[in-house]
Length: 192
Image (cartoon, rainbow, N blue to C red; front, side, top):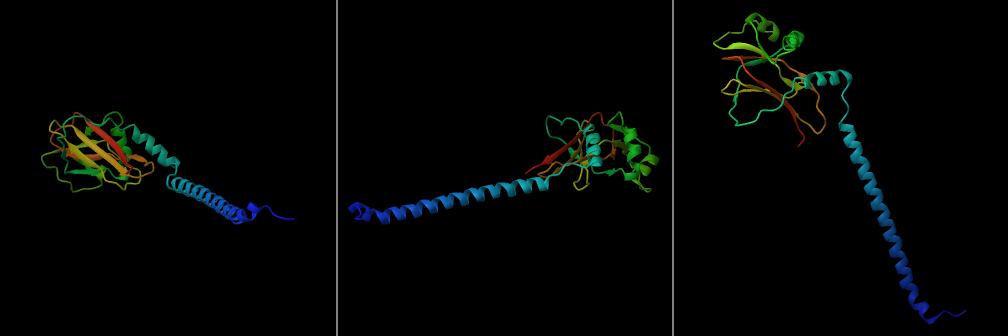
């Protein structure tokens, strides 16, 4: 049987077109497969990094949240507090009891020694005050304590993390010239 005269001329074109369409179809399939696998890897990485808090950390976090206050507003005129100590693990229950209903309390030198676990603390001209502060649950990141000229104290805790960071109550003893009228307790997580 004889072929149509145009059919012979179009055979290479048709075959070439079929190969290109098939190659395109394979490329699109590969791109979709690559996109899906990339999304799966990304979701796995994100879920692998951030885990929910275990029960003790969750309880500590909720207790610490009760101590966190609003942040201060106004002119930045804070000065770093040079002399302060964190309360030892063995003194935290006692410190929590003293700070149950107030953010700051003046304490005698004998109690300071028990709370911070040091026996040779010099009194100096400033008085010791126990005050609320909140730090990360693992104790990795430092606290910063600052005071304003009016005596207001800012106890700032925080962390750098893409994931949620558990908080923990971290009472501190500070030496100040006068009783703070206001204490700001903040905890911020930098997610950059």
